[in-house]
Amino acid sequence: MIDLYTWSTPNGRKVSILLEECALPYKVHAINIGKGEQHTPEFLAINPNNRIPAIVDSEGPGGKPLPLFESGAILIYLAEKTGKFMPRDARTRLICLQWLMFQMGGVGPMFGQAHHFLRAAPEQVPYGIKRYTDETRRLYGVLNKRLGEAAYLADEYSIADIATYPWIARHEWHQVDLADFPAVKRWYDTIGARPAVAKGMAVPTPP
Image (cartoon, rainbow, N blue to C red; front, top):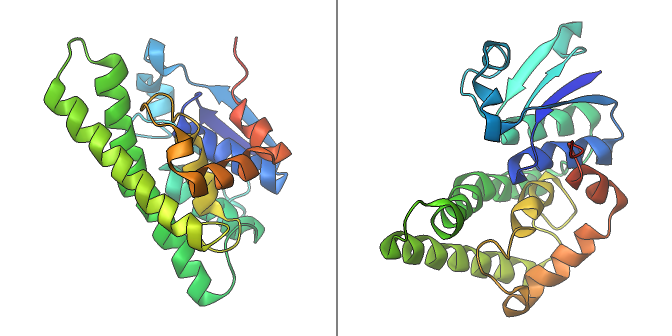
């Protein structure tokens, strides 16, 4: 059994989508980051960096429980554990990891900053808004070019797509019209039609 500590954010939804895609049994522990529950001693014992998501796999390597944080590391672990959604061909595997790191180092941080300056900042900061919305659109352009060449980020559906999809699902938050990026829209619609993706995006269930 896998215990999933999560909240309804793009990073949290990456892991619940993959768990659903792999049909792995898991138990959801909602960590309400709006109420600061990520700072409790119980959660910090699992993730000292006080960020969701985190997991504890009771059947980790060697049959021992494994606590794990950082969404990218969790995706790689679960893909390797199940043998699913990580390309087996060495070249394609590296392409998958490349686009996963693109999400981790680019899409997530930059889109997150755009969210902050557009929606959460206590005052309007024109420099911050322009800097991060410009970079967000640039990253959409990179994705659009890639997805104009291939059906999925690593040619086949993989954890790279699973990691990126929940961030694109908030395109309205960063004031992006997907019609401006038709290859991204085609990809987004295709992935969104997967039943496991819809289930994973609904985790945790609202109180």
